[in-house]
Image (cartoon, rainbow, N blue to C red):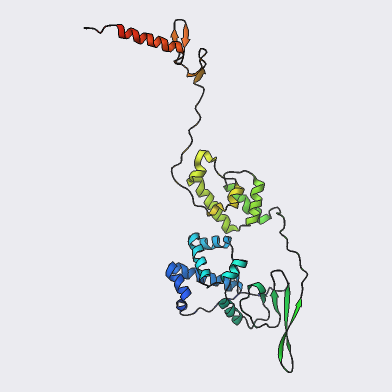
Length: 322
């Protein structure tokens, strides 16, 4: 089997005074060393991949975890890097890809001796010099093979376009978890306390397709929520969301709502109460009053009349010594 063609770089040039670029100077002024470091960390990733890098919310989560910077801070810095034009905002908005014309110029200059390399047409911001065995890839997809042809009078580049058999790219219906993902999902399922609707949770898991690092973040957040989240702890876990809901909402990115836990009062026991056969009211056992041969509860009209009668007698008796 042929060895895959290398696309990334082992190293890239770093200007002595990159701070002379006012755009980078602004990033450093607003965000300090975090802004400076995050920009060059992203450059390292881009050049390791080639001249562009696909970037998603999932990548931001893992990146923030790896460099130990709050994800909200990372998002703000990346937004400013794009706004300042250090990375091309138009390409990112259209394709979720990091690149720039400067990155591409340096990349093509560094790879001019390579026998073969691949270009994605939609990501190009410059016009590189096509060389033998250059392959242009299209997102749609169409491949263009570039063959250099020498002539006695002049050197020309003749472009021969050949449509590749287009395999219609369709979103495959959700399939059962593969062995590796099944192991990761089982660990998630074991950690999650509200084990409801497992099939829906598996579908949500397939959409996210997490790796071991993201699983570690998920489990850590779940364990923290089990002991600290006031919503999860309320009423013995009655408000813990279904696992599919938690996954679709990216619950691992939520803040834990800590504080005093207010538990609902347990329902009042009815074992100490009975129904009065006279008036039909619910009364506590042991509170009946016997008048003659008949028992009345404190709520019976007869009880009220007897009490009034007793009080009246007490008022009519003169006090001692009067």
